[in-house]
Structures are given as C-alpha cells and as structure tokens.
Image (tube, rainbow over all chains, first blue to last red; front, side, top):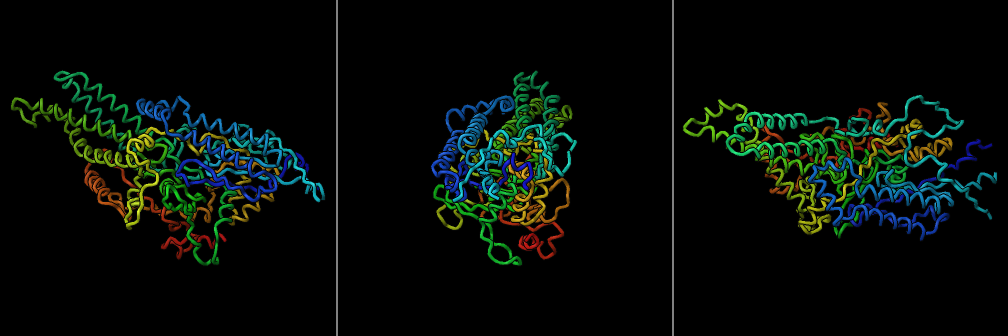
Length: 141
Length: 466
C-alpha cells in the first residue's frame, strides 16, 4: 500500500539538465538541443521557445550598451557605493526571468508533470527540469 | 494501451524553488525528527574556504593574507601625511592639498574594502544530481585501477578552440575563463589572480573594484610622494639642508621611504592591468600565454572585442553580475537528507539513494541548494570527497610566474615586484597562477594512500570511490 503522502505529492522520476552553450563566449546562454527524456512529455518547439526566451532575457541582462555603461561610470564615480542602494539592471532582469519561469511552469510544464528550476538557483550552470513520475503506473497496480 | 494521465502539479504546493524563511511543514514520514534550531542561511554551510561576517553580507577568504598590513600602511602613511606635511603645505602652498589627499584616501580605502569583501564571482558547486548526470555523459573507459581519462570538453568560441576542464572539487566543467582557486577552494569566474594584499581572489565581480583601487592608489602614492618632496625641499631651503628638514618632520621620512618603494611597483601594476583591461585578458591567461600563439598557431583572444575602448568599457563599466552563491538565502529544512546522499561515494549510488527516499525528501532534495549538496557536511571527516583535488597549498614562487609560455613583457612587472617586495612596499599583487587548472592535483587526504600523492593521481582516489 502506498504511503499517504504519495497521493499528495508526486515522486521525482528523474532530472534533465540543460547545459550551458559556450559557443558565443562567456555570456549566459543555454543549449537548445531537445533532451530525449522529455520526448514523451513535451513538444520540441515549446522547449526550444522556452530556452530561447531565457537566452534572450539573459542577453538583455548582460548587454553592453549605453545604459549599462552609464550605470558603470556612475558607479565608478561614487566608488561603487551606489551598488549598495540601487538595484542593478541585471538584478531587474533576473526578477523578470523568475516571473517568466514561474509563468511557464504554471502554464506549460506543471500540467505535463515537469518542473523548471530557475538557473540562478543552480549558479547559472544548468536549467534543471525535474520529471515527475507518471501517476497512472502506480494506480494500475 | 496505457492511457497516461499526469497529475497536474500545482506549483504552489511544491516546496519552493527559491528558499523561503519558514521551512515547509514536515510530513508524517519525518524520521529525522524536528530540528528545533532556527532556519539556517546558506553561508553557514558554504563548502569553500571563506569566512562570512554580518550574517553573510560580507565574505572574505580564509586567510586574510596581508590585508591588515595593506590597510595599515595606507592609513598610517596618510595619517602621517595629514599630521606632518599638510599644515606646512597649507601654509606655504594651497589648502587644496589636504582636500585632494583626503578624497583620494577615501576612494582608495573604499575600493580596497570592496575588493576584499565582495564575492569575486564564486561558482556554487554542482548538486549531486548534476554531478551524476555529467558522470554519465563522460565516457569512463578502463578499469578502476587506471587513472580515468582526462576530463576535458572542447568548445568553439569565435573560431578559437577552447578547452573546458572538469573541476573535481566542484564537480562540473568549468566555464571558459573560470579557474579553481586552491587557497579559497572555489571556482571563480573570469579568474584573474588571488591577491594576498587584498586577501581575496580577483575575479569577474570585483575586478573593477581592484582596478579602481590600484589606479587610485597610484595617484595617492604619487601625490603623497610629490607633496612630501615639495615639503622637504621647501623646508631645506635657505641652506638649512635635508637633514634639518627631516629632523623637523620625521614623519615625512617614513612616508618618503614607503612611497618611494611602492610607487614604482604600484604604477607598474596599474600599467600592467591597464594593458590587460584594454585587451580583455586576465592575469591568469597572460601568464599562461593562452592567447599568445607560442606554438606558432594562429591564436587570438576570442573574448576581445578587437577595440580598446570597447574592451575597457566591457570590463570596467559592464553590467554588474549578481553573486551566484546566495549567501543570505535560507536553507530548505532537511539538510540531513542531502548530506546522506552526498556521503555515498558512487555517483550512481547517490542518484539511487535520492530516488529511494521518501517522496517528501525527494521533492525537497529537488530544490536543495547546490552549496549544501556538495558540502563537506559540517566538519564530518569525509575523506573521499575531500580528497580529489585539495591541492597542496600550492605556493608557486610568488615573484615570478612559473608556468611556461610567459612572455617577457609580463616578466617585467613581476621583476619590479620582486624588488618592491624585498623592501617595505605598500602593495604588489602577487599573481598566483592556478596550478589546479592543469588537472587533478595530489590529494592531501591520508586515505588516498602514498602512491597517489606525489604524482597527483586522482585515479587511485577515484578507485577508492568506485
């Protein structure tokens, strides 16, 4: 007989790790190659779209341009003390990324028994996708 | 035909991926028992050799090196300047002098503290699941008694082949330009060097503070030197002689000595780092000659923007990346689940043990922070894990970089530093190239056995793991 708890929370069956793509240098970018373990659960296009959007958001955070230079120069003039009080552009985009991931989880991944973990929780090394067990296997017993 | 029905998972019901202060409620399977202690923050279980203050707000390396000496020299010299030289110079020259001196002093101290107390860009270690996944992908040929094949991965960056090495401590492939600092026992992004004068590694996040520090220190040293010289010259006028002047103002003698010997090394260091910034290189890469084309191949720095101005801007004024180690985040409730998983040495076993635990534990371990998962559990003498690349405190000759491929140009600032270090100097950043970058270093643990120590053969250690 299965423990009571199992009925409330699904068991983790495995995890898939989407690694970083370093072909463009050290910028934060993840590989868009569709992992085979997800084939039964997710569309390739949806996966690619999620990863591509994440890549674009990180590119926006790390973009070199007028605004970031201004922020940097201003910071230098104040001996970088403004970092103590001001939220940087990067941090703002990270919040945006968190919201996006939560949104994707709610709309696309959770209904399919998957869970995206925000890469910042893993030091921007991987996008961890947790695959939860298929409930119908247990119920068939 | 099986009809797959997936139970809709309510993301809100799951333990949060982001740590929240109150630990999730424990189910009836909590055989670990309730821990009455307050929720702990991640810095308390950080696996690297760092120390934390102000509840995780401030991070320093294990050994503060000579940071107190650096601070002391700066404060004492400036203090002497304000006491002995300023009154005279204000009277005879202009009152701008103490103002400029004061501004420079404040700037120098602030940037020094920021360099020392900021996370240089430490990469958190891989979770056991990630490590297991990577192990599966690496082809492990040969039996246990042989050294495992070198773990490298090649990527193409801007038409340059860059080799990524596997870090045995952090259990991941190091991103490009990342290096493992043996003194701090962390992988640091865009690793420049470990600076004992500052008591911290210099990496991606604090390089701009470091550069600002040495540039402003150059100005400060030169400024004080100039002022003291002027002061003594003015006092010695009228045939009174230098000795008379020095007797009247003994503090100036101290300042003169300190500044004279420091200004060359600091100016040299600033010049060297200005060159590095303008070509978007790190000290580590420069010393190892990664992009100098020593073997006649057509190599160039793939990270350079090919424009001095853009390089400078991107290094010094680029967006400030966040700290990845989330020092002040809270740990999810049951660390014991994950530490048990860590202790099992086989990566496959680790995965299995995760899967066979209660479902509650599984979900929580799914969101467990990486720091915890790879940590040497709180002082537990865990030999196998701590072995593989606890490098011997590798002390390369501090004056001269020892790796091959060093260009003569890079040799001159170190030579100057050798001279400056012999005397009492304010600072000369020692570039400690990272030997651990070249693969596994000899384990320090006794369990590895004598045979495995000298040659840095991690194979024997891994044999014990498998």
